[in-house]
Length: 279
Image (cartoon, rainbow, N blue to C red; front, side, top):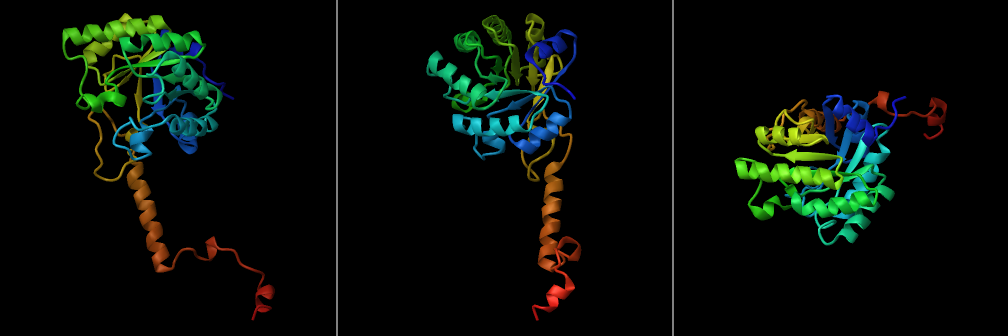
């Protein structure tokens, strides 16, 4: 039986040159399937706002939303490290509130670690959480929680100045105690540089192959969307779950309307002698 993956094991894998596999999960069955595939980390992302709850961004997602889904993922996970996203507003007010909310993810949610967005401005929060014994995955580059407030999703690290800011932020977050860093929508050259300049694993999403690992939203990689739905440029679709689900539901609807489902093979019958007594 495979044992639960720990943060020291994640760091050992990284030091050994193994690429880390990270996917998002938001519910019990998805967590079970992803965990059975041997992924290293399951991220309960606040991207559930987009792909599960139907919001236009991650900004409206609440602590209660995240705790609800974190608990479900934890129940479906035996081996992977479970990281819970801290939603917008849960760590920006002050460090005391940030620690209080992070503790809820560990105690109530059952998560193994938390993730939060931010560069140099988030260093103090990361330090406060790690000082409280809470493992933190940092997140720099594109910051989805606030991106729409500043003009939308844009590629990060397109010039020297921007590159230096990202490197400085990554090193400061590492020094503050983060055990890994997500690099989102960062140019591949800068992502590689950040990876070279830090000892902790970098987890890329839309940031090229130079990172120590990769993360994708499970709905994106599995094609779990309606036909014609938008897919980010950096996503490779490894399945077509949406089309298969639509096929299944359409087949079900057709047979129900035709009266061919349920048939005798999918029904339960009384003993014939008992049936005769009814007439």
